[in-house]
Length: 423
Ligand SMILES: [Zn+2]
Ligand SMILES: [Zn+2]
Image (tube, rainbow, N blue to C red; front, side, top):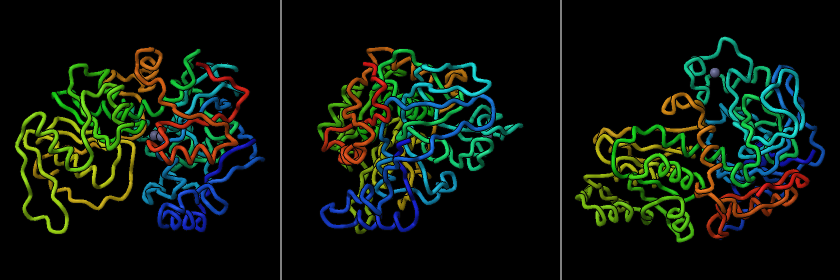
Protein backbone atom coordinates (compact mmCIF):
# COMPACT_ATOMS: atom_id res chain seq x y z
CA UNK A 1 0.00 0.00 0.00
CA UNK A 2 1.00 3.66 -0.23
CA UNK A 3 1.87 5.26 3.09
CA UNK A 4 3.65 8.33 4.39
CA UNK A 5 6.42 7.20 6.73
CA UNK A 6 7.93 9.29 9.51
CA UNK A 7 11.47 8.01 9.97
CA UNK A 8 13.03 9.45 13.12
CA UNK A 9 16.43 7.82 12.57
CA UNK A 10 19.07 10.08 14.11
CA UNK A 11 20.71 11.32 10.87
CA UNK A 12 17.30 12.26 9.42
CA UNK A 13 16.26 13.91 12.66
CA UNK A 14 19.47 15.92 12.94
CA UNK A 15 19.36 16.97 9.28
CA UNK A 16 15.74 18.13 9.58
CA UNK A 17 16.31 19.89 12.91
CA UNK A 18 19.44 21.70 11.66
CA UNK A 19 17.64 22.87 8.51
CA UNK A 20 14.99 24.64 10.60
CA UNK A 21 17.67 27.04 11.82
CA UNK A 22 18.70 28.24 8.34
CA UNK A 23 18.09 31.97 7.73
CA UNK A 24 14.88 33.20 6.10
CA UNK A 25 13.15 29.86 6.55
CA UNK A 26 15.12 28.23 3.74
CA UNK A 27 15.16 24.85 5.47
CA UNK A 28 11.46 24.69 6.23
CA UNK A 29 10.83 22.00 3.62
CA UNK A 30 13.68 19.76 4.80
CA UNK A 31 11.29 17.42 6.62
CA UNK A 32 9.78 16.23 3.35
CA UNK A 33 12.91 16.47 1.19
CA UNK A 34 15.16 13.46 0.63
CA UNK A 35 17.12 12.81 3.81
CA UNK A 36 14.36 14.43 5.90
CA UNK A 37 12.03 12.84 8.43
CA UNK A 38 9.08 12.04 6.15
CA UNK A 39 8.85 10.17 2.88
CA UNK A 40 6.33 8.30 0.81
CA UNK A 41 6.42 4.51 0.60
CA UNK A 42 4.73 2.80 -2.35
CA UNK A 43 5.09 -0.84 -1.30
CA UNK A 44 4.45 -0.81 2.43
CA UNK A 45 2.86 -4.15 3.47
CA UNK A 46 -0.86 -3.85 4.16
CA UNK A 47 -1.25 -4.01 7.96
CA UNK A 48 -2.38 -7.39 9.30
CA UNK A 49 -5.07 -7.81 11.91
CA UNK A 50 -3.60 -8.72 15.33
CA UNK A 51 -4.35 -12.35 16.21
CA UNK A 52 -6.97 -11.58 18.84
CA UNK A 53 -10.74 -11.09 18.64
CA UNK A 54 -12.31 -7.78 17.65
CA UNK A 55 -9.87 -6.30 15.12
CA UNK A 56 -10.89 -4.45 11.97
CA UNK A 57 -9.10 -3.19 8.87
CA UNK A 58 -10.00 0.32 7.75
CA UNK A 59 -9.60 2.40 4.61
CA UNK A 60 -9.13 6.03 5.65
CA UNK A 61 -11.51 8.34 3.79
CA UNK A 62 -10.24 11.74 5.00
CA UNK A 63 -7.29 12.30 7.35
CA UNK A 64 -6.29 15.63 8.84
CA UNK A 65 -2.79 16.92 9.48
CA UNK A 66 -2.51 17.70 13.19
CA UNK A 67 -0.25 20.35 14.69
CA UNK A 68 1.74 17.47 16.16
CA UNK A 69 2.31 16.06 12.65
CA UNK A 70 3.54 19.49 11.56
CA UNK A 71 5.81 19.53 14.61
CA UNK A 72 7.11 16.07 13.74
CA UNK A 73 7.96 16.92 10.13
CA UNK A 74 9.95 19.90 11.42
CA UNK A 75 11.75 17.73 14.02
CA UNK A 76 10.01 19.38 16.95
CA UNK A 77 9.30 16.49 19.28
CA UNK A 78 9.46 16.09 23.04
CA UNK A 79 12.42 13.87 24.03
CA UNK A 80 10.71 12.76 27.25
CA UNK A 81 7.60 11.57 25.45
CA UNK A 82 9.67 9.22 23.32
CA UNK A 83 9.09 6.80 26.22
CA UNK A 84 5.47 6.63 25.06
CA UNK A 85 6.20 7.02 21.34
CA UNK A 86 9.37 4.92 20.99
CA UNK A 87 9.02 3.70 17.40
CA UNK A 88 11.56 5.34 15.11
CA UNK A 89 9.46 4.46 12.06
CA UNK A 90 5.84 5.56 12.30
CA UNK A 91 2.93 5.95 9.90
CA UNK A 92 1.27 9.19 11.01
CA UNK A 93 -2.34 10.29 10.70
CA UNK A 94 -4.51 10.12 13.81
CA UNK A 95 -7.44 12.42 12.97
CA UNK A 96 -9.50 10.54 10.43
CA UNK A 97 -12.75 9.08 9.24
CA UNK A 98 -12.59 5.67 7.58
CA UNK A 99 -14.61 2.92 5.95
CA UNK A 100 -14.54 -0.59 7.41
CA UNK A 101 -12.80 -2.79 4.85
CA UNK A 102 -12.55 -6.14 6.64
CA UNK A 103 -13.72 -7.43 10.01
CA UNK A 104 -11.81 -10.11 11.87
CA UNK A 105 -13.22 -12.77 14.22
CA UNK A 106 -15.35 -11.65 17.15
CA UNK A 107 -16.40 -8.29 15.70
CA UNK A 108 -20.00 -7.27 16.40
CA UNK A 109 -19.98 -3.48 16.61
CA UNK A 110 -19.32 -2.73 12.91
CA UNK A 111 -19.63 -4.41 9.54
CA UNK A 112 -17.89 -3.98 6.20
CA UNK A 113 -18.77 -0.70 4.52
CA UNK A 114 -19.58 1.17 7.76
CA UNK A 115 -18.15 4.67 8.03
CA UNK A 116 -16.47 5.20 11.40
CA UNK A 117 -14.67 7.78 13.51
CA UNK A 118 -11.62 6.29 15.22
CA UNK A 119 -10.64 6.70 18.86
CA UNK A 120 -6.91 6.30 18.46
CA UNK A 121 -5.96 5.33 22.04
CA UNK A 122 -5.02 1.71 22.74
CA UNK A 123 -5.17 0.87 26.44
CA UNK A 124 -5.15 -2.41 28.42
CA UNK A 125 -8.44 -3.52 26.83
CA UNK A 126 -7.14 -3.37 23.25
CA UNK A 127 -3.66 -4.65 24.19
CA UNK A 128 -5.21 -7.72 25.85
CA UNK A 129 -4.00 -7.08 29.41
CA UNK A 130 -6.15 -8.65 32.11
CA UNK A 131 -6.36 -7.55 34.87
CA UNK A 132 -6.09 -3.98 33.60
CA UNK A 133 -3.75 -1.37 35.05
CA UNK A 134 -4.88 1.05 37.79
CA UNK A 135 -5.84 3.79 35.31
CA UNK A 136 -7.92 1.50 33.13
CA UNK A 137 -9.52 -0.19 36.17
CA UNK A 138 -10.64 3.24 37.40
CA UNK A 139 -12.19 4.20 34.05
CA UNK A 140 -9.26 6.29 32.76
CA UNK A 141 -7.90 4.34 29.78
CA UNK A 142 -6.67 7.61 28.23
CA UNK A 143 -3.88 7.61 30.85
CA UNK A 144 -3.25 3.84 30.78
CA UNK A 145 -0.07 2.70 32.52
CA UNK A 146 0.85 0.22 29.80
CA UNK A 147 1.11 2.48 26.75
CA UNK A 148 4.69 1.30 26.20
CA UNK A 149 3.73 -2.40 26.08
CA UNK A 150 2.36 -3.63 22.74
CA UNK A 151 0.52 -6.68 24.12
CA UNK A 152 -1.40 -8.33 21.28
CA UNK A 153 -1.39 -5.15 19.18
CA UNK A 154 2.21 -5.14 17.96
CA UNK A 155 2.15 -1.37 18.43
CA UNK A 156 4.59 0.22 20.89
CA UNK A 157 2.91 3.61 21.12
CA UNK A 158 0.02 5.26 22.90
CA UNK A 159 -2.14 5.30 19.85
CA UNK A 160 -2.79 4.64 16.20
CA UNK A 161 -0.93 7.15 14.05
CA UNK A 162 2.36 6.70 15.93
CA UNK A 163 3.39 3.16 15.04
CA UNK A 164 4.03 1.28 11.82
CA UNK A 165 2.39 -2.12 12.22
CA UNK A 166 -1.15 -0.68 12.24
CA UNK A 167 -0.82 1.67 9.29
CA UNK A 168 -2.37 5.06 9.95
CA UNK A 169 -4.43 7.91 8.60
CA UNK A 170 -1.77 8.82 6.03
CA UNK A 171 -1.86 5.35 4.49
CA UNK A 172 -4.31 3.40 2.36
CA UNK A 173 -5.05 1.08 5.30
CA UNK A 174 -5.07 1.15 9.08
CA UNK A 175 -6.19 -1.38 11.69
CA UNK A 176 -8.09 -0.72 14.89
CA UNK A 177 -10.02 -2.63 17.51
CA UNK A 178 -13.79 -2.44 17.19
CA UNK A 179 -13.95 -0.81 20.63
CA UNK A 180 -12.10 2.16 19.10
CA UNK A 181 -14.71 2.67 16.39
CA UNK A 182 -17.77 4.94 16.36
CA UNK A 183 -20.16 4.41 13.42
CA UNK A 184 -21.12 7.79 11.97
CA UNK A 185 -23.67 6.99 9.25
CA UNK A 186 -23.68 9.76 6.64
CA UNK A 187 -22.05 12.48 8.75
CA UNK A 188 -20.15 14.78 6.33
CA UNK A 189 -16.52 13.73 5.97
CA UNK A 190 -15.08 17.12 6.89
CA UNK A 191 -17.08 17.17 10.14
CA UNK A 192 -16.47 13.52 11.02
CA UNK A 193 -12.70 13.90 10.55
CA UNK A 194 -12.75 16.57 13.28
CA UNK A 195 -13.94 14.08 15.90
CA UNK A 196 -10.48 13.47 17.36
CA UNK A 197 -9.34 17.12 17.67
CA UNK A 198 -12.83 18.11 18.86
CA UNK A 199 -12.55 15.46 21.55
CA UNK A 200 -9.23 16.98 22.68
CA UNK A 201 -11.04 20.31 22.95
CA UNK A 202 -13.97 18.96 24.94
CA UNK A 203 -11.73 16.84 27.17
CA UNK A 204 -9.63 19.91 28.04
CA UNK A 205 -12.77 21.86 28.97
CA UNK A 206 -14.14 19.08 31.18
CA UNK A 207 -11.24 19.40 33.61
CA UNK A 208 -12.80 22.69 34.76
CA UNK A 209 -15.52 22.86 37.40
CA UNK A 210 -17.56 25.37 35.39
CA UNK A 211 -17.68 27.81 38.30
CA UNK A 212 -16.91 31.31 37.05
CA UNK A 213 -17.78 34.03 34.56
CA UNK A 214 -14.76 34.49 32.28
CA UNK A 215 -12.50 32.18 30.31
CA UNK A 216 -9.61 32.81 27.92
CA UNK A 217 -8.45 30.40 25.22
CA UNK A 218 -4.94 31.01 23.91
CA UNK A 219 -4.43 30.12 20.26
CA UNK A 220 -6.85 30.21 17.31
CA UNK A 221 -5.64 26.98 15.69
CA UNK A 222 -7.95 24.01 15.25
CA UNK A 223 -7.55 22.85 18.87
CA UNK A 224 -8.16 26.36 20.21
CA UNK A 225 -11.23 26.79 17.99
CA UNK A 226 -12.68 23.39 18.86
CA UNK A 227 -12.01 24.07 22.56
CA UNK A 228 -13.82 27.38 22.23
CA UNK A 229 -16.77 25.71 20.49
CA UNK A 230 -17.01 23.08 23.25
CA UNK A 231 -16.79 25.69 25.99
CA UNK A 232 -19.52 27.75 24.30
CA UNK A 233 -21.78 24.70 23.93
CA UNK A 234 -21.40 23.74 27.60
CA UNK A 235 -21.57 27.29 29.02
CA UNK A 236 -23.79 29.58 26.91
CA UNK A 237 -23.45 32.45 29.43
CA UNK A 238 -19.68 32.30 29.88
CA UNK A 239 -17.65 35.28 28.67
CA UNK A 240 -15.07 33.71 26.33
CA UNK A 241 -12.03 35.49 24.91
CA UNK A 242 -9.59 34.02 22.41
CA UNK A 243 -6.02 35.26 22.18
CA UNK A 244 -5.26 35.51 18.46
CA UNK A 245 -2.33 37.23 16.77
CA UNK A 246 -3.97 37.65 13.35
CA UNK A 247 -7.23 38.49 11.64
CA UNK A 248 -7.71 35.04 10.07
CA UNK A 249 -7.72 33.31 13.46
CA UNK A 250 -9.78 36.11 15.02
CA UNK A 251 -12.57 35.70 12.47
CA UNK A 252 -12.64 31.97 13.16
CA UNK A 253 -12.65 32.54 16.91
CA UNK A 254 -15.77 34.71 16.66
CA UNK A 255 -17.41 32.20 14.36
CA UNK A 256 -17.03 29.34 16.87
CA UNK A 257 -18.40 31.34 19.79
CA UNK A 258 -15.81 33.75 21.21
CA UNK A 259 -17.28 36.98 22.61
CA UNK A 260 -14.08 38.84 21.83
CA UNK A 261 -10.52 38.50 20.65
CA UNK A 262 -7.42 39.58 22.56
CA UNK A 263 -4.05 40.49 21.06
CA UNK A 264 -1.11 38.16 21.68
CA UNK A 265 1.61 38.83 24.22
CA UNK A 266 1.41 41.05 27.34
CA UNK A 267 -1.24 43.14 25.56
CA UNK A 268 -3.66 40.27 26.19
CA UNK A 269 -3.43 41.04 29.92
CA UNK A 270 -3.68 44.82 29.58
CA UNK A 271 -6.62 44.55 27.15
CA UNK A 272 -8.50 42.36 29.64
CA UNK A 273 -7.97 45.04 32.30
CA UNK A 274 -9.17 47.78 29.92
CA UNK A 275 -12.34 45.83 29.05
CA UNK A 276 -13.32 44.39 32.40
CA UNK A 277 -11.42 46.39 34.99
CA UNK A 278 -8.99 44.92 37.45
CA UNK A 279 -5.71 46.34 38.66
CA UNK A 280 -2.46 45.69 36.85
CA UNK A 281 0.54 44.92 39.02
CA UNK A 282 3.96 45.49 37.50
CA UNK A 283 6.86 43.35 38.67
CA UNK A 284 9.81 45.66 39.37
CA UNK A 285 12.63 43.11 39.37
CA UNK A 286 12.66 41.39 36.00
CA UNK A 287 16.04 42.33 34.50
CA UNK A 288 16.62 41.65 30.84
CA UNK A 289 13.06 41.07 29.75
CA UNK A 290 10.02 43.31 29.64
CA UNK A 291 7.71 42.29 32.47
CA UNK A 292 4.20 40.99 31.94
CA UNK A 293 1.72 42.77 34.19
CA UNK A 294 -0.25 40.68 36.65
CA UNK A 295 -4.00 41.08 36.44
CA UNK A 296 -5.62 41.24 39.85
CA UNK A 297 -9.24 40.17 39.50
CA UNK A 298 -8.17 37.83 36.73
CA UNK A 299 -10.23 35.33 34.77
CA UNK A 300 -11.48 32.01 36.10
CA UNK A 301 -10.06 29.71 33.45
CA UNK A 302 -7.29 29.88 30.84
CA UNK A 303 -6.81 27.09 28.31
CA UNK A 304 -3.47 27.43 26.56
CA UNK A 305 -3.49 25.49 23.29
CA UNK A 306 -0.04 26.73 22.24
CA UNK A 307 2.04 25.61 25.21
CA UNK A 308 5.05 27.85 24.53
CA UNK A 309 6.84 29.34 27.55
CA UNK A 310 5.55 32.79 26.53
CA UNK A 311 1.89 31.71 26.37
CA UNK A 312 2.04 29.73 29.61
CA UNK A 313 3.58 32.83 31.23
CA UNK A 314 0.72 35.00 29.93
CA UNK A 315 -1.77 32.43 31.24
CA UNK A 316 -0.30 32.57 34.74
CA UNK A 317 -0.49 36.37 34.75
CA UNK A 318 -4.17 36.64 33.75
CA UNK A 319 -5.79 33.87 35.79
CA UNK A 320 -7.36 34.68 39.14
CA UNK A 321 -6.08 33.32 42.45
CA UNK A 322 -7.23 29.72 42.81
CA UNK A 323 -8.04 29.69 39.09
CA UNK A 324 -7.18 26.98 36.59
CA UNK A 325 -4.77 26.93 33.66
CA UNK A 326 -5.26 23.98 31.32
CA UNK A 327 -2.36 23.07 29.04
CA UNK A 328 -3.90 21.48 25.97
CA UNK A 329 -2.60 20.00 22.79
CA UNK A 330 1.14 20.59 23.08
CA UNK A 331 4.08 19.34 25.05
CA UNK A 332 7.73 20.12 25.23
CA UNK A 333 10.52 21.41 27.36
CA UNK A 334 9.67 24.69 29.09
CA UNK A 335 12.13 27.08 30.66
CA UNK A 336 10.03 29.57 32.53
CA UNK A 337 9.18 31.09 35.88
CA UNK A 338 6.36 29.25 37.66
CA UNK A 339 6.25 31.58 40.71
CA UNK A 340 2.66 32.63 40.12
CA UNK A 341 1.52 29.03 40.57
CA UNK A 342 2.73 29.14 44.17
CA UNK A 343 1.71 32.67 44.98
CA UNK A 344 -1.81 32.55 43.56
CA UNK A 345 -2.43 28.87 44.28
CA UNK A 346 -3.16 28.23 40.61
CA UNK A 347 -4.11 24.75 39.42
CA UNK A 348 -2.12 23.81 36.31
CA UNK A 349 -3.91 20.96 34.59
CA UNK A 350 -2.34 19.02 31.75
CA UNK A 351 -4.68 17.31 29.33
CA UNK A 352 -4.22 14.55 26.82
CA UNK A 353 -6.28 12.07 24.85
CA UNK A 354 -10.04 11.70 25.28
CA UNK A 355 -11.79 8.82 27.00
CA UNK A 356 -14.72 8.05 29.30
CA UNK A 357 -15.58 11.34 31.04
CA UNK A 358 -16.58 11.35 34.72
CA UNK A 359 -18.01 14.84 34.12
CA UNK A 360 -20.37 13.30 31.53
CA UNK A 361 -21.38 10.41 33.77
CA UNK A 362 -18.80 8.12 32.18
CA UNK A 363 -19.86 8.82 28.62
CA UNK A 364 -16.97 8.81 26.15
CA UNK A 365 -15.82 12.19 24.85
CA UNK A 366 -16.37 10.89 21.30
CA UNK A 367 -20.06 10.22 21.91
CA UNK A 368 -20.68 13.80 23.03
CA UNK A 369 -18.58 15.30 20.26
CA UNK A 370 -20.27 13.20 17.56
CA UNK A 371 -23.66 14.36 18.80
CA UNK A 372 -22.51 17.97 18.38
CA UNK A 373 -20.88 17.35 14.98
CA UNK A 374 -24.15 15.85 13.74
CA UNK A 375 -25.91 19.12 14.62
CA UNK A 376 -25.55 21.45 11.59
CA UNK A 377 -25.57 24.47 13.91
CA UNK A 378 -22.30 23.34 15.52
CA UNK A 379 -20.05 25.93 13.86
CA UNK A 380 -17.21 23.89 12.37
CA UNK A 381 -18.10 23.85 8.67
CA UNK A 382 -15.16 25.04 6.59
CA UNK A 383 -12.57 24.19 9.24
CA UNK A 384 -11.01 21.66 6.85
CA UNK A 385 -9.75 24.41 4.58
CA UNK A 386 -7.73 22.30 2.14
CA UNK A 387 -7.90 18.73 0.86
CA UNK A 388 -5.23 16.88 -1.14
CA UNK A 389 -4.82 13.37 -2.42
CA UNK A 390 -2.25 11.29 -0.55
CA UNK A 391 0.25 11.57 -3.43
CA UNK A 392 0.22 15.34 -2.89
CA UNK A 393 1.28 14.95 0.75
CA UNK A 394 4.25 17.31 0.44
CA UNK A 395 2.04 20.14 -0.74
CA UNK A 396 -0.40 19.30 2.06
CA UNK A 397 2.34 19.53 4.69
CA UNK A 398 3.58 22.76 3.13
CA UNK A 399 0.09 24.26 3.41
CA UNK A 400 -0.42 23.00 6.96
CA UNK A 401 2.99 24.41 7.95
CA UNK A 402 2.07 27.83 6.58
CA UNK A 403 -1.06 27.87 8.76
CA UNK A 404 -2.90 31.21 8.78
CA UNK A 405 -0.60 32.60 6.06
CA UNK A 406 -2.13 29.94 3.77
CA UNK A 407 -5.60 30.53 5.27
CA UNK A 408 -5.33 26.98 6.63
CA UNK A 409 -6.98 25.63 9.75
CA UNK A 410 -6.95 21.88 9.13
CA UNK A 411 -5.52 20.34 5.97
CA UNK A 412 -6.91 17.00 4.82
CA UNK A 413 -5.40 14.08 2.91
CA UNK A 414 -7.38 11.53 0.93
CA UNK A 415 -5.52 8.19 1.07
CA UNK A 416 -8.25 6.45 -0.94
CA UNK A 417 -9.62 8.85 -3.56
CA UNK A 418 -12.11 6.21 -4.76
CA UNK A 419 -13.95 6.74 -1.46
CA UNK A 420 -16.21 9.68 -2.22
CA UNK A 421 -16.27 12.39 0.42
CA UNK A 422 -19.69 12.84 2.03
CA UNK A 423 -20.77 16.49 2.05
ZN1 LIG B 1 -3.77 15.56 16.85
ZN1 LIG C 1 -4.28 0.32 31.25
